[in-house]
Image 1 (cartoon, one colour):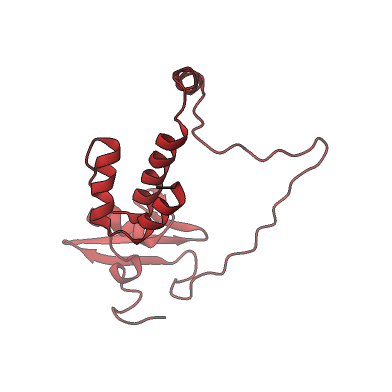
Image 2: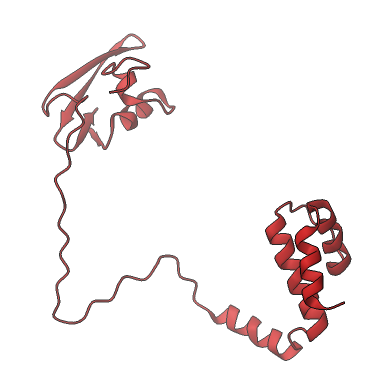
Length: 161
């Protein structure tokens, strides 16, 4: 049977049948249920068996290259030509209409204490630390994630503003 005809058969097979075919070709079962992945792997194996796989020398060289490769932990920085300056223009962020003006102190009774949070121009101050969002402050206080606007009672539940 030609490779093309086998490929057309693969595309019509059910996932369970593809898993069985995978086991036949690779000699081991798979728990993968992704049809696309199964079809690609089976097609690769059929082609490798029909036309030949990598030679042992090529496999050893690939392994050597993989061992010597430096793994990149972050994407490379974009290169700029010498003498050009890159400047980003940041648009001023609009303040959320639910927030009071900077300098306002929010008071919230919680577990017998009156907690005070100061609204800053960019963030919120609580217990000497600055947080980026009200939710971050609420998480610090409660130990679990919750909506900061609801926790500090700036909006009512179900009220979309």
